[in-house]
Image 1: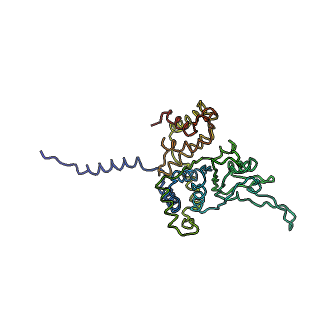
Image 2: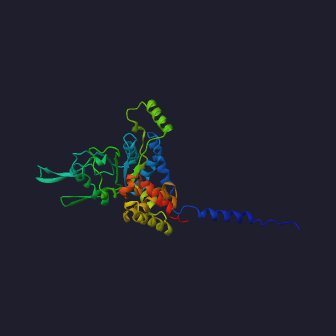
Length: 343
């Protein structure tokens, strides 16, 4: 007897494949977000060689609507990378150089007497912008640093009984030098906790160093940042931030985040563990890293990738272990390795 093919077999197979593919399709459209951020990376790469990790974390902070502290030795492109990022986004930009004699009014603004109407008027300081770059934040004393507490956490300023709300998006990127101690002031833990990320920036490798030298030799422009274009509007950025909030996080991954944070409090090598604010920061940052990868759901790898930048400035290594050379990053690595990854 001849085998009679079912004419619908191919169609049924196609339907089965389509159903299978649909299971893995994004429930949230992330295409525009990812395309825009790739354009931002390309614009920054016109000037900056390497430092992919710093750029990725800065973009994740943008999506999370969180502030960033960048730490690295002089000359590793901390300041210029932040300036280039600001230039790719169509928002207001302010750069504030922190110095030992800087006063809070130099940042926030001050009331000035207007002779014409015989009234005091509030003159806004440089903090009233969307993208704020604070260079060498640890150069100013505690009084000046404390001026940032309210604006970083609540995105508002209270002056003379009047509240001024900051325009969204609002991002503070601060830099500091880890090796210079003369003329610097340690940032209070309460202020460190207001930064979503602390990014440690290292030296480029040999190939990147050669490329940096070649680019400098071949580039005849006075201002290298002229080649960088605006590719994202303020409204687009706000839309992307809202989109990130909708990214899916399974309950077992929320439990995984909680276990990481609780472990920092119970760890014998740490004098101070992370607060509940760190839990929320890790959740938000994990969503941002998922968005950078074009996914609408968080994976354990997103949480692990975000953990170092979220936690390293929120935990304090015990003095004994610090003397032995143990770092916060090493302890965080041990914590992550000791917790079972949900599947």
